[in-house]
Length: 173
Image (cartoon, rainbow, N blue to C red; front, side, top):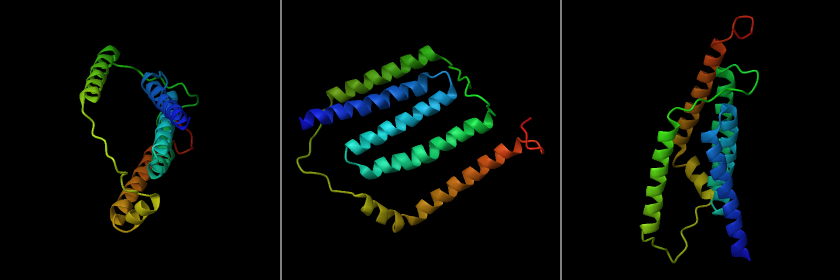
């Protein structure tokens, strides 16, 4: 019963991820695509939890959902100066893109089913969130801080660009 339940949970999270990813691509409204991207990120985080990668799941939620997606939503709302959520997203060359994606998908399926996959009898070494945290705060502290400064500069730049569009009275043109 446990194997059956695991398969059901996997297919639920995989379905959420694939369907919301399709909604990102096929949505006519930009804001709907952004909220579908939120579901896609949560679906991927759920798959990470299902696979036992707790650190990757937490990183997925904190960085992609908490940082990048919120920054994207603020960018959409500030640059288009919307009062409602009807920002049209135009599709260019939809049929050729579907053909390219279909051919790529068929090629990937061919490679997946024709490859002789090797299985490992022993379990991989455990990398816990504590071990990764120690590495980030010791060995990789400088790159970690450099990325945080880069993100701070990007946020300040976005706020400056959004503020530049406002009139002195505080109203949009």
